[in-house]
Image 1 (cartoon, rainbow, N blue to C red):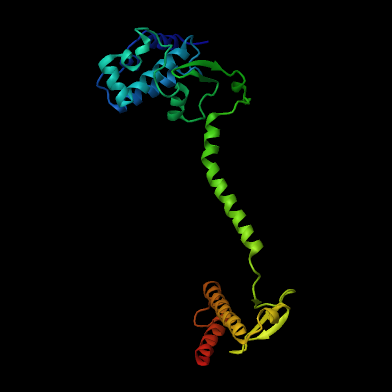
Image 2: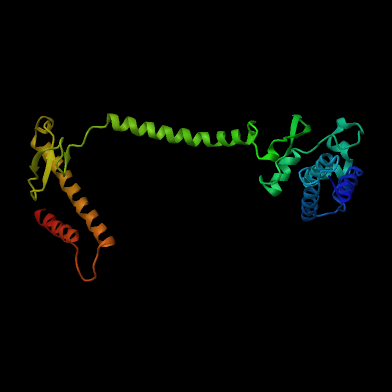
Amino acid sequence: EHSQEQADAVQRVLGCEDYYDILGVSRDASEAELKKQYKRLALQLHPDKNPAPQSDEAFKAVSNAYAILSDENKRRQYDQFGKEGLNPSMNGRQGHSHFEADISPEDLFRMFFGEGFGGGNMFVYNRPGTFRFRTHPYRREGRHTHESSPGVWVQLLQVLPIVLLVLLSLFTNLLYSAFQSPPVFSLDKTNDYHIERHTEQLRIPYYVQDSFRDEHPSVSSVKAVERNVIQEHLYHLQTQCQHENFYHRKPGRQGRWCKKYLDFVRELKKSR
């Protein structure tokens, strides 16, 4: 059932042909005034709020009027030439069955009030410029239809390039790992790196694989490896010292790792 006030609101809008009259504003109304009137009338006439007959037509008319008058170019055309200036093919036809705006009434409504309102009805386009009003009786009972929303597909297409970039990056890393040569040495003993050696300078222990002698037969090659061992050992001590200072530092006391790091730096300077 509907009230007389709801029915009167519908008939008032349907009785108007001029877009300014439909919204109830003057011809020099500002954008803020247009928005205010649209929001008031849209809530008053939305079919989910107003069960009066033809409320869907009145809601469509209000949406159309606001969509045209809120567009600067369309408003100028309408002020100069009327509805024929917006759509010459109308040839003087009257009524609210034709929709000149570029956005559907329901989409316009959601722009102002969000997705959570109503949901029992929607406008569906049949062809450019026209649409029909369709009711989903099951939505009011909390059930969901199985129709795919075009907006979902648009969002998926927008995200797709990012997903492809992530997959490409992962694939590239996998290929790099597959073809990358294994490290020459390790500072820790493992199953693969179990042969212990010491650098000639500073006697730093490190571990190599069984194939080390075959892959590095010359003295210069071994020295190059040992320079990397020293750098790696220095970096390891420095990292541990920084961690110790950040998490475990005690006022007035030097941490164990920081002492090792400073001692090693001094020894390294002396050996050079």
